[in-house]
Amino acid sequence: MWKKGASKNIIDAELASASAEDLHFSDGRIFASMCAQPLEVAVEAHVRFIEANLGNAGLYPGTQRLEKEVVRAIGGMLHHEGAGGSIVSGGTEANITALWIARNVTRRKKVVFPKSAHFSFHKACDILGLEPQMVGLDEKFTADLDEVKRVVDNDVCAIVGIAGTTELGAVDDIEGLGALLPDGAFLHVDAAFGGFVLPFLDHGPPKFDFAVPEVSIITIDPHKMGMSTIPAGALMLRDEGQMRTIRKDAPYLDTVGQAAALSGTRCSAAVASTYAAMRFLGEEGYVKLVKGCMDVTRYALEKGTGIGLEPVMDPVMNILCFYAPDVVRIQSEMEKQGWKVSVARNPESLRLVIMPYVTRDSVDGLFADLEEVLGGLDD
Ligand code: 0PR
Image (tube, rainbow, N blue to C red; front, side, top):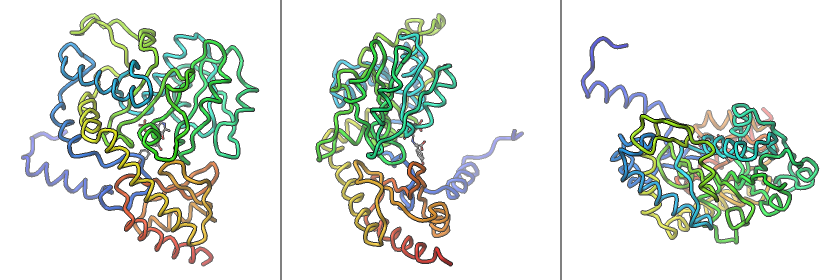
């Protein structure tokens, strides 16, 4: 610990130097992040609500009202105006909480999810003492329904479907999973990434949300394609009453004396930030944003095929993967050129996430260097 405090100028210089070591979205070189550069209006909202803590909601009726409005807006976007829920720290917390609720309601143990599921489901099973039952993928890289059918039984607490897989952006057949749901089990949809993309696509997105009657809970992250600040995830429930199954007494709190969230102190600035982003963009703004991302994604697809790369699948959303030889080496060679790309494992491929800050110019730059790297692979 420092003995004496430092001046603002010194702190500012130290922070500036640390920040200069970081990569920034504005550099146009990051193709491996699922978080966006938050909107200015969202950053300002975040700062304004920096001290709010919905962990003690009684002190913050205004923030609480904003949270209700945000939840209602997201519910409407997901075809259920009456949905309940809360703003949480991100997809991991939302997924853990979803399975926590499912376990407490059903008192069952088995969770069925595709191997494309985010690793937060393994964390959730670990913490909650649930049994993961992983199923393989079909030729569309979505949960294999035949396998799901084989493994479901009356021990199933939840089936998980992914609406926008982390690696490929594939969307599981949520209606198909719903048809296989055993009585009383939950259908949880992880739309952490896809939730702010699918509703705004112009090519007839697959049904993934509360429009599918079996869907019980949805994870959707404002801090990914929602343009909010980190940490903002959302847990959306068809039946808000189920939140009571995770409620704990907290008699000293200046609220109803009960808390129903995994976190105690909650970063409520993210509520304001999400409100600001959604209010500022509106549906029209997101349609435009997603269209921009999809245009750049298709442009990148052409660029890739133009240099002889084969896409793993036609991109449903703004994630694009190409088969390539020795992808790990390509990734590290690209890193030497200052590009951050990632590697998907299922199947092994070069993965590009085309977030709103990715421009055609940076795509041009990336593929020019990628072509050189590919040419030099035999050396
Ligand atoms: N569900 C899906 C489908 C996800 O893709 C992710 C995160 C989560 C849940 C968990 O969300 P949180 O990270 O908000 O808890 N997917 C990315 C990942 O873990 C997140 C990410 C973001 C990765 C920014 C890199 C990065 O620079 O790979």
